[in-house]
Amino acid sequence: MKNYYDILGVSETSSQDEIKKAYRQLSKQYHPDVNPNGEEKFKEVAEAYDNIGDENKRSDYDNRRRNPFAGMGNSNFDFSSVFEEMMNGQRSHRPRKAPDKVMNVEVTPVESYLGVKKELNYDYLEKCSPCNGEGGESAGCNTCGGFGTITQKIGNGMFTQVVQSQCPSCSGKGKVIVNPCNRCYGQGGVIKKENLMMTIPKNVDNGNFMRIAGKGDYNQSMRLRGDLILQVKLDLTDNFEKNGNDLIYYLKLNVLDVLLQRQVKLPHPEGDLMINLPKNISSDKPLRLVKKGYRGEHDSGDFYVKMNITNDVDLDDEKLNKIKELVEQ
Image (cartoon, rainbow, N blue to C red; front, side):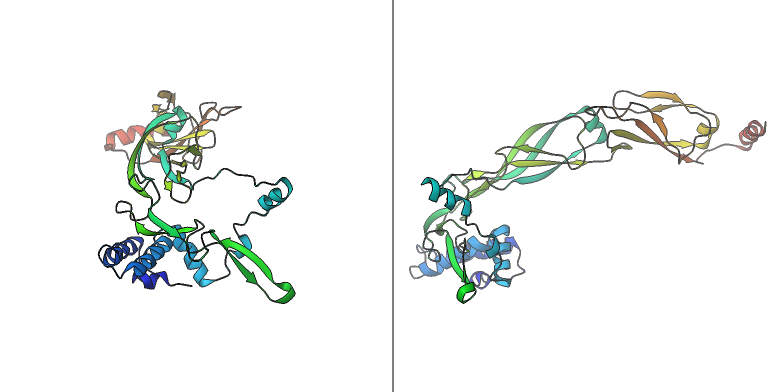
């Protein structure tokens, strides 16, 4: 197996930026327009970058180097399609799908209660116009002969098994870039900025996700953009918390509020609530307001008020003595 790291003159621990920098330098050095004797080296450099210039491809390549038989038990050869072809005289065509782009979207418990519109700004990979997403001029892959797959034999004698798997040199495309595009450097895509206005529905929870078709990154192998997956991440701000359909608020009180059973204001997504503090309340016993939580599909949750009672009271001796008299009565 070729050592693509040696070809690009980088180490196995090099970052993707370091690999890209090395590729750009070598591709300029050995470009046939600059170096008439560098065509073969130029092709070799392009092949190396095609295999380790992308994080996912690099991971697959590293796994194959550590274990040459890795992935053979899960080849890309579709036996069901072959069976259908034998029975029906044709192969079924399943829709291809590019990988998804996953992003977190922060939502507060109050925003989850009411629903909210959020503006989303992000970078994505768009098809390169100059090369039409091809990455540049390509030629048939020498490793697989342009088929995109390779056949290998495992075992000996009667236990020999023939396995067909994706070609490691061209990643199943059947061709490799020999003259990379000057704009996308063989990647087939360029970085663009996207601006979306998203409507976040009510009662979304941590880990919920939404799919937006065709708003992910352009995939050179698939020749199309993937989907954008937005995963909700609840941001616990403003002393609110979401627990299922229950809404929780953390209220700070001082001991005088409790002793005098004062009226306090409770913030709530639908408007502030005024309540009189009941007797015998404590930090470990939250107040419960029934049906004031999130509205579920079949029922509504409750609104819990968890209190943090402190001794942060600034009183002179005269006021303290009056409080003692009241307590002792």
